[in-house]
Length: 479
Image (tube, rainbow, N blue to C red; front, side):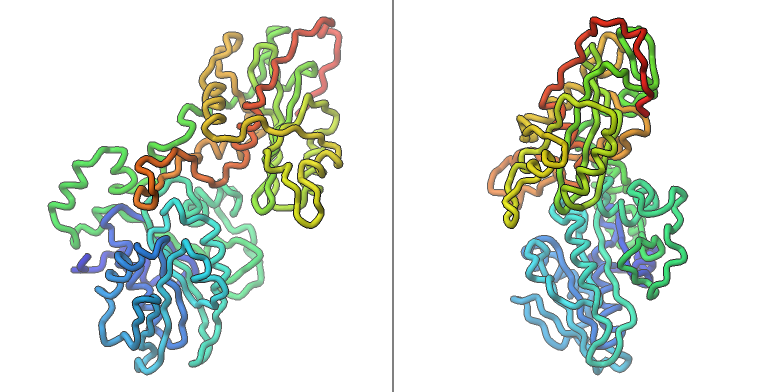
């Protein structure tokens, strides 16, 4: 895109001093041009910079990103360019007598950036479904180049551009709503660690919202650099498409795996006891209880606590959601939450039965040793499990007039959040040999939902109607 005039939003992105910056906008909003211009500004500001500029595939780097970069880069700034390696040397410094290095790389090949000491990195089209949070974390860990051949490099930068892509990892880190939803900041959006003593712009132990800068733009914000025919063609697109690619919206658009879910229908304050014919605020003691575990090694471990009513409704009444840790750590915390309760069974992911290389023990074996006997999930396949979850979301219990899956309000916040963020993976056809690749959900923060799927495909039995007089039995408040 030929730049006639830089927009105000492009200039804010190009010139920000924030350690991490994102330019998220509609198609044609000038995101890639702004990213390339920021690369030039940083790399030529002083000699000794070493940066990485990438997209997911090498074809995209070579055919899209590189040509757009050199369209903006004055040829007199280029000292050396090796197109086959993506290696670029630029003249830099106050007198342009120093040199900075830029590596153009494809992110699908981790060897292109692992082990590098970078002073900056830039990712184009960061909303690509194959560019995951792990790529972002890995690249942030590369920002450790503080000195070069010409002296110190006082600041390091990581920045991205892309389209809106719902509640993705970009939304998590760069929007106030995402930071709050993921517990990175206080509920009012303020820094959890305001008194943290740290080098400005750098903190490995805590999240600081001031390190993150977001520019949002619609296609219309760059109208001066776009032909009228382009705007007309965009206006003719379907409204759902325009929300993401034209106007710009963080809403999950089309592609929700469970569009049937709503808090109004599936989150409740009360539990219906069909024996007493009353609404109560706790799970009756005589109901059958179940647990389900999605065990994670590097990822969080999720455990859901469920009970079934005599009419067959499954109530999720508690959850455990723990970050990476040992099996023993997770088991102890799950046992703490389980105190005083008896469970019919605990179902776990089939991969938990794989033996670990050094100890020769599986996670399932350790859970059992710790006092949580587990059974193998009968069906791990998404194609088989998702329809079962949908059935519980849509099938109505005639006793309550509500769906057969209910979540007690405030008791499983991660499960509720994941329902709203779980979308189908938008797989670019150009990267697949088959014409119609199979539908798969996006693997991102889905641990509570996986745990729910394991539970429901085990088809927990409804509580049998008790023969004793339940009116004379004590009912402990489980919450």
